[in-house]
Amino acid sequence: MVSARTCLLMLLPAALYFLEEARGSLLVEERQLVCDRRLGPCRYREACACNPTLRLGRRSLQTYYYRRGRCHAGGYARNCNGFPTRIACHAACIGFVFGNQR
Image 1: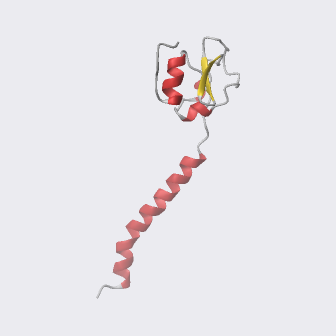
Image 2: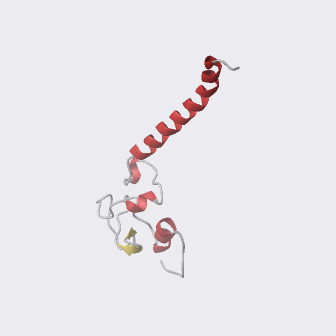
Image 3: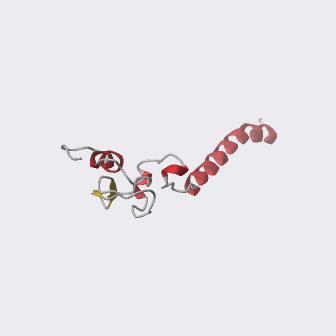
């Protein structure tokens, strides 16, 4: 017969593992979305949710941003939701590239 103490010692590592995993999942949910390229690296697809009207850097009709399933001209260069080409916007936010669009 196995004593209660032995059972506890056998189950303790598994319990600690599950508690650590639960803590890790909370930390992921608490992360803030970084939309300014100067503050850190942009994480795509998440950065496609950045507000494209955040005035980060210079606005240009040659810079593209993602909104509502499409890429539009007129993004801000330092915004993580600002891309040098339409193709780069599609590749990061939609996940596929088509045609010869710029």
